[in-house]
Structures are given as structure tokens and as C-alpha cells.
Length: 100
Image (cartoon, rainbow, N blue to C red; front, side, top):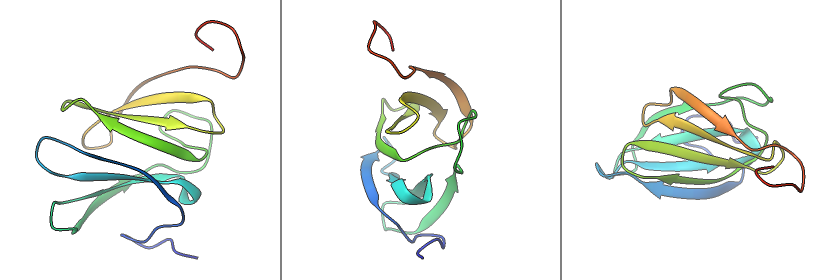
């Protein structure tokens, strides 16, 4: 398994912040990894689960310059983090109705 710092098991989404740091959704390791613009590993966060800050197949990442947003395939939600990985909030649930 590829679980070490800077290793991926299903790199699935990528975004870049205003400081040119790169964030990668490491789908099968259920984490987000952060790198500098030269590709140097900075940090990571997340584990498998349904709790705040946990993931079940993160599939997409985006940033607005202040926050990082992570879309999850199996938890059917979006989570919001600071650019250092601090959990802020989440929204979405499994379902077909408005806002679900």
C-alpha cells in the first residue's frame, strides 16, 4: 500500500491556493495531502469515517483562497476546512431532496 507522506492511493482531485500550495484528495487513503509549489510534502489530514474531518473517499477539492472544500463520494457531503486542515463545517446528506 502507498500510505506514506507524499504517496497516493487514488489521487482523485487537485486544487491550488493563492500561495501556490497544492492540495490533493487521496481518495483510497481517505485524506487530503498538502504540498508546496515545488512538490515538497507539507501536511495531511483525515482518516476513514463519518465524523467531522473524517472522509470516505474524498473525490474533489476546491479553494476560494481562504477555505478548502472537500467533496466526498461515500459520505455524500462537502466539508469545509481552513487551509491548514482545521475542520470548519459540513453540509449535505444521502438523499434526493433539496439540500440532500
